[in-house]
Length: 100
Picture 1 (cartoon, one colour):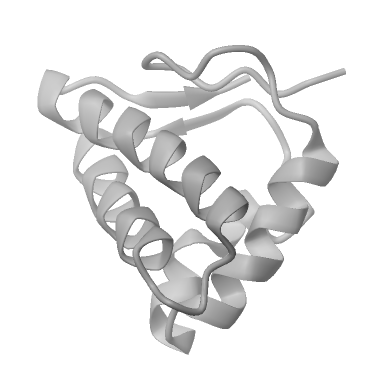
Picture 2 (picture 1 turned 180 degrees about the vertical axis):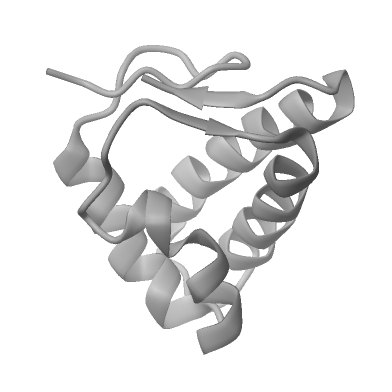
C-alpha cells in the first residue's frame, strides 16, 4: 500500500521509497534541518499526517535545498523537488499538506 501525498504528487509512494529518500536527505541537510523533516522521512511514518501550511512551506524549502545540493543523487533530487513543490503549493494555498 502506498502513501498518497496531496497537492499534485502523482501516484502513491511506498514507505520504502520515502524512507530511502530520507537517507539521502539526512546526508545532505544539516542535523538541525534534518530534525525538522525526519518525522516524514525517517522510515517510521505513521500516516495520516496533516502538516500546517507554515510548516509545509519550511519543509518545501528544505526539500529544495537538499535537491539542489551537489551531494544529492539526481534521481532522489528529482523526488525531493516534486515533494518540495507539493509542500510549497499547500503553503501558498493556506492548506494542510496531507499524507494519507
